[in-house]
Length: 246
Image (tube, rainbow, N blue to C red; front, side):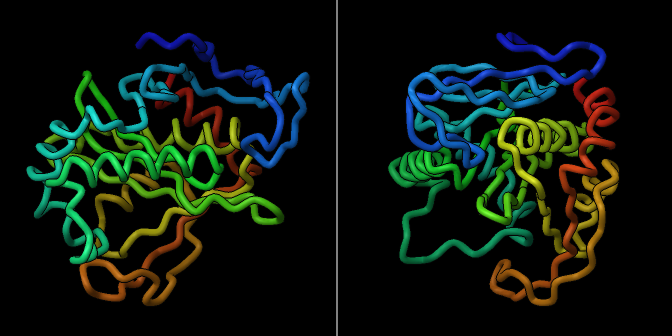
């Protein structure tokens, strides 16, 4: 994958230097016109006409844009039955983002605003040049929290190829290394064994069950709270990046 900033084959901390044009920077750091924010990350990343791209060994995480609509619609249509049991019910009063191009474009614009405001970072997951899922960091809180929530889905036709754990490692590296978060939480319905295997494969801690935590497909569902902090990432991160990103 053609990434202008690449991690070493042996995972070591590298510095990414981000120049601020003034105002607030991601991570809650204030900068002036001549100030630089130095963050430590293993992630490979680059900029494209579609925005920020995070690179793994086999996957790329890229923000979706309106031009992705046709592929998005085809993938979501093919996965309707596969995903419906695990997702919130879409409001009937709003256009369907799967079928309505303008609604999809509005969704993309909302994700872009979230990134600009440092409240969320949503990416399509691409493998072999195809959209195979999404990996989203949402609900980012700064101040004393410095935390966010990760959610993901994978095309059933690509399930079992371990694209999701690789994409999650790339996202966690970006969250802790570049964004400077202290804690990331991943909430999963207990019977969703496929999603649970992803986080358990990576050794992410199980904090217990939150009862009736989210309304999913019309029902208030319990969720297992998986979480990892930056202290844990400093221990697990080198091994996960070496094993999944290389």
